[in-house]
Length: 107
Image (cartoon, rainbow, N blue to C red; front, side, top):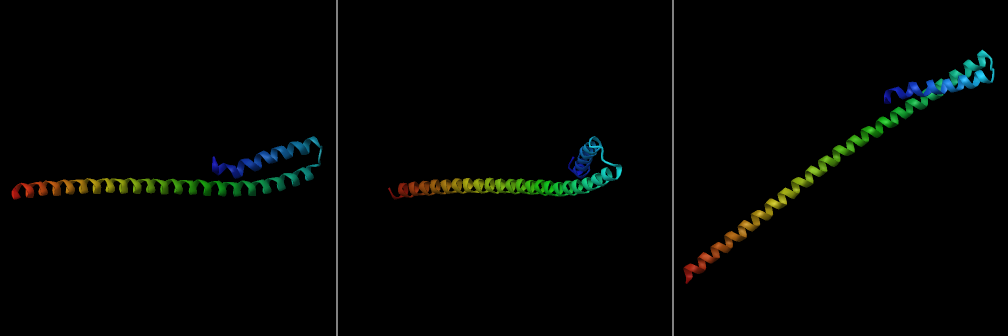
């Protein structure tokens, strides 16, 4: 649909201008000049619109990819923190067990 904008926009504009010119009973040369100018102007507008929309879509896709990468990084960081916490708790338990064993040996 995006590729058809530069074609459809001048087509509809030319249809409107042609109808108005016919109703006003303009001569054939005046009507042709109006249509040519209309088609050129609206084709240019359609091409610019197409480029802007494509750049917006591309930018949006890149932003979504960046957000996914950020979420993945955050999840990985969270998992690493959880693993460090588990490792610290196991280490503390091991120290506590060793202290209890040392106390038992002293008694």
